[in-house]
Image 1 (cartoon, rainbow, N blue to C red):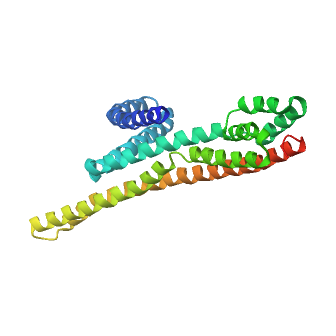
Image 2 (image 1 turned 180 degrees about the vertical axis):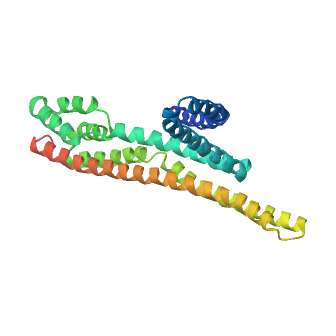
Image 3 (image 1 turned 135 degrees about the vertical axis):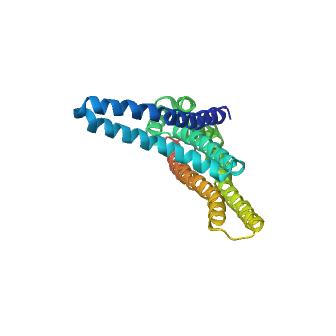
Amino acid sequence: MKKQFAILALFGVLIFGSFTLAQAQEGDSTQTASEQTEAVTSEQEEAPMMDVATDVASDEASFHQRIKEKFIEGGASFMWPILICLIFGLAVSIERIITLNLATTNTKKLLARIEDALSKGGIEAAKDVTKNTKGPVASIFTQGLMRSSEGMEMVEKSIVSYGGVEMGRLEKGLIWISLFISLGPMLGFFGTVIGMVGAFDAIEAAGDISPQVVAGGMKTALLTTVGGLIVGMILQVFYNYLVSKIDSLVNDMEDASITLVDLLVKHKIVK
């Protein structure tokens, strides 16, 4: 949880900093343009390069400005919850990605070390290897080696049982990402419905179907849907990556567990 809150705080700082940077760029754009105009009149040979720099700066400023305008037009009461869903979803996703990457183990190298330890020092040496190795695969191996004196059946049961525990730990947090994937678009649709109701209220109050009233109300209403769909699409990509990563780790655990049992039989540790 501490990692998630730290990542969340980082995203919050980045997002609020982007708005502040956009305002600063907007304030400095006039000064930059005037300085470049004076430079053009004094040094005509440098004019093309300065014009390109001015265009790039204006494009960046307009991009941030457009985001702010669309965010404000969508309504803070609906756009802020959508943005919060994105921040929390990204925080959980990044924390899960870091955790799963740290949990990845080179199973072939680990099995080679275990086999070497079994041939030289027996079961206790193999335990030392697995205990000093991080990751779910090493933890499962440790549980299996600890039950080696109780026979093959207990080793297999221990591996299967603890494998389920490790799989549950790998899948931790996915339910929250799934929640934000669903909640973001739902909030967007809800904002659209409320915005359409407001647009029809404006038409009723005006007593006439004015194109400006209808277009403005529908534009404001649909912006929340756009924001929600963007959140859903971004988080869906992270979710699918995490699911594929977990499936890969589970397959490695299953294959490595079978190989471990074969090694125990090969070295006559269990029967």
